Length: 273
Image (cartoon, rainbow, N blue to C red; front, side):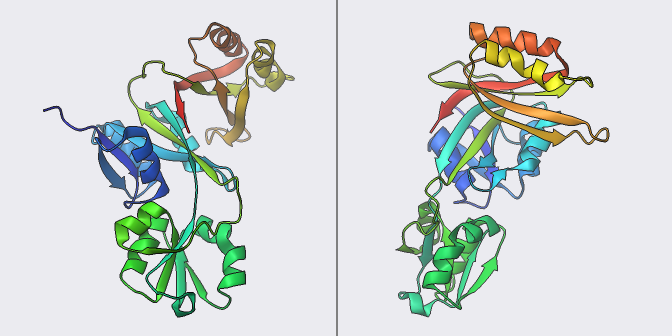
């Protein structure tokens, strides 16, 4: 019998990262919770896990900087992308809303649900904890508590979904990268991620981006991060639709390389969700 694929995710169990990992790998993998995003990189690089799943961007809260920072030097490549709609529910065993004494969750979830909480649970204390699943675990042990979290967390920790989707934004989506050591075969819709450092000269960014426009490619994201090697030196991250082996994308990448000081292809991968 073949060994199960070991997949690290940002734990504990029933986080949104866990849900994204399940969506990508199904039920056949062995899912290993990690305490931090850095630990996911460390375990996957060292071979303690075969793959890792990390959040990279939320439509409301923006980029997950630690993920981008680790991708700069990591030998891992992006082998998959998952976009997960985020539905934050009120989870509790209190029976009635009036019995809730405290509401727990990750700071991002609290921020996204604050309006609903102020209107429907005024005066109830809010407490920020490390993750939505930790909040659910704590609420599962105390009926005076409620958690903001997922349906997966409610099932895992024996909670009732008292109110469905109390985050007030309809565009709440988080993107995740699947990390591994080997490229994956092309399949269906593809995305490509890369990074580069500009040459220190006028028009450098324009020259780097010109091949993308010339080849009529859809750039879905570009963002810069300090390189941490030199003051005012920045690394640009870019996401594009298509596969790096596509003729037009391959041509654009070849031309982009000529116009930048440093280039790294992070990976081409199937896009799910």
